[in-house]
Length: 188
Image (tube, rainbow, N blue to C red; front, top):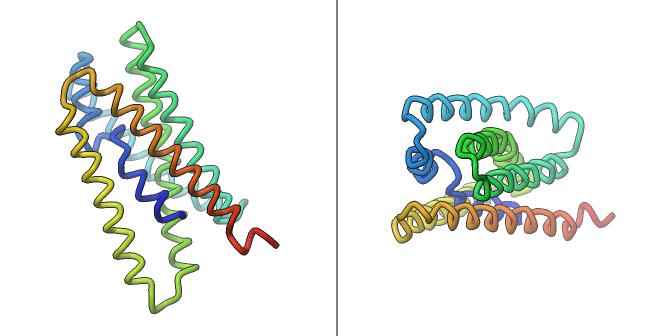
């Protein structure tokens, strides 16, 4: 469940990695230099997620860390989705940037959590195979995200990308939550 949830995060087009968010912000009138600045801030916040992960796993279980981080990312994407209804371009762009940057923590913490869970729960002889399948799933979902960008490439498409991202992360959060509830270690 956790691995599939992680792979679904690669469908999220609301990152600077796909170019869709960058194109949307350029279309809204933001200068490339500012986009680069915010992209750098997002990268720094992602690195900060490493420290948040360490703190969280000291205070909570690994499973609980994964749970709050995936739902936190979902809420951050809802903030970006809310920007679609904003009439004020400055405020809407602020919501997009804020949701993106804040969501980096949840994304990074969840990625580290699932990776750690796979290291701890998968038997030694199977880790390479599981890691390979995980990498393949991540790549397929990432490719689907890029494919969406190719198929629907007009400026209105950002709404479709935003909805697709929220749905993908929402499904990922539900899968992870259901997986925890069904886990034999949680039924005791």
